[in-house]
Image 1 (cartoon, rainbow, N blue to C red):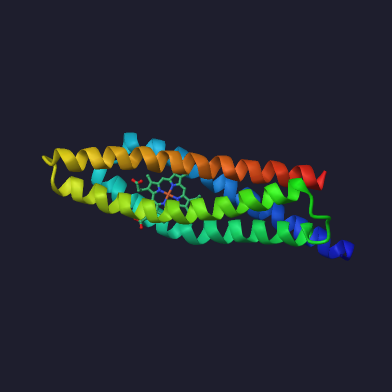
Image 2 (cartoon, rainbow, N blue to C red; image 1 turned 90 degrees about the vertical axis):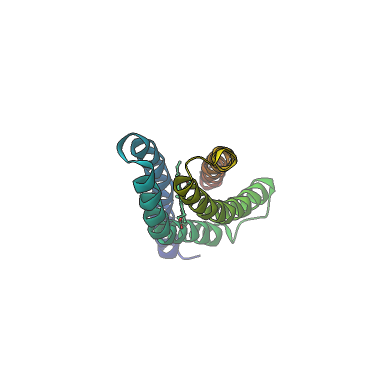
Amino acid sequence: MPHGVEVALACVLLIAASVWVGGFVAIAVVARVTVRTLDPSARVAFFRALGRSYLIVGTTALALALGSGAALAAGRPWDGTLTATAVLAAALVAALAFGVLQARRMTRLRRDALARPGDAPLAARVRRGARSAGLLRASIGLLSLAVLVLGTIQAA
Ligand code: HEM
């Protein structure tokens, strides 16, 4: 691959990965802050709007990062590290898709729970859902870090 193309792909990879990881960390901080600063119905409305807008920015950044990373790796021999990176990247995309569907379900569930404050089984479903959403978000974060570390090992 010509050196100029390689440099351009590396720039895209670095910027897109920064946006993906930076956005993820920023949303995690925002999520904590909104627990203290917004009432529950305002928080649901806020995340509904933020989640939908960030879905475009976040998935575009992730697609650019994975696409440019794949293009840079294209000429390399297919070894164990590359296989592990590809498998973890596929798991990351699947976890994100699943996470988005789950987040939408959580928004609906939280709205229903706000409309029916005395419904104890519904409140229990919200708590269970929030726990699994938290676990899924943590695994998206860990998978992102793992892909980034493996990618860096291959670039070094
Ligand atoms: C960077 C990748 C992320 C994307 C693309 C994303 C996308 C979304 C989407 C599409 C929704 C659903 C909005 C709707 O109701 O239609 C949502 C909701 C939500 N997101 Fe995210 N999100 C991301 C990261 C995070 C992180 C890191 C956190 C917190 C640690 C978070 C916390 C939430 C919360 C609290 C909701 C509301 C639903 C609930 O109560 O679980 N998100 N997000």
